[in-house]
Structure formats: structure tokens, C-alpha cells
Image 1: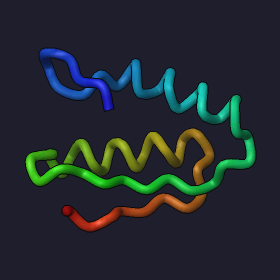
Image 2: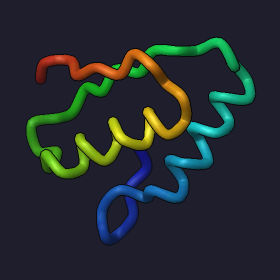
Image 3: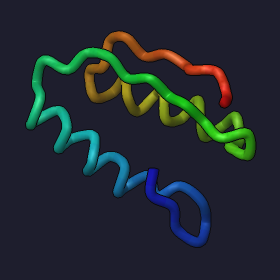
Length: 64
């Protein structure tokens, strides 16, 4: 996920998710694999954005 000086670049992420949705309209699953340093609030916000872009199977992969 792209970052800027204040953290995650949410606008850029939305643009990328929209492009994924347009390129693969049948894509249904989104798995989030955060690094150990990722703030919990960012993980939740990312999962929320995936849901907004109609990803039905949103999951969290263990750290590793």
C-alpha cells in the first residue's frame, strides 16, 4: 500500500482498488497481510475499503 509523509495514502489506494475492480470485475476476495508495525486502525480501514469496493471475502492473514 502506498504511503506518504502522514501514513497510508488512502486516495492512491482507492484509485488502485478501483482499477482492480475494473480490470477483474469478478474478483471477490481480498486478504490483508499487515507487517508487525502496521497500526490496527489502518488494517481495519483497509478492510473497510475493500468492502466498499465490493470485495465479499475480506480476510486477515497472520503476521509473518
